[in-house]
Length: 139
Image (cartoon, rainbow, N blue to C red; front, side):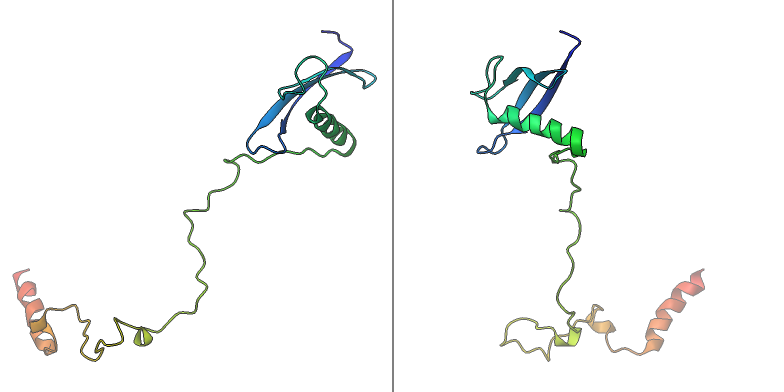
């Protein structure tokens, strides 16, 4: 390979096919003229490629050298995962007394959500304290 040439390799996405990209190789001389070019697409096979992918790579090289712009495509791992984060709650909170429980024909007056056993409900506090005292005496 001559020292007066520059080799450029780039990757260009296909326009009509999703997920297809072509590797493009271009060799330029010191004056900026194209010595050789090839692409993986059908029109770009051989040392004298005539396809739009070569033009796209040359335009990207020109844009980078003049303006400093470099066009990169994000890979799937560069974007942070968001599926495990909680979504924001957009509705207003509802008071527990206003919750709709069951069907419209359910009698909500008889519903009782006390987790204690039935015999312990509505008992005087002294009975519960006697239970606590029973264990305090053993310590």
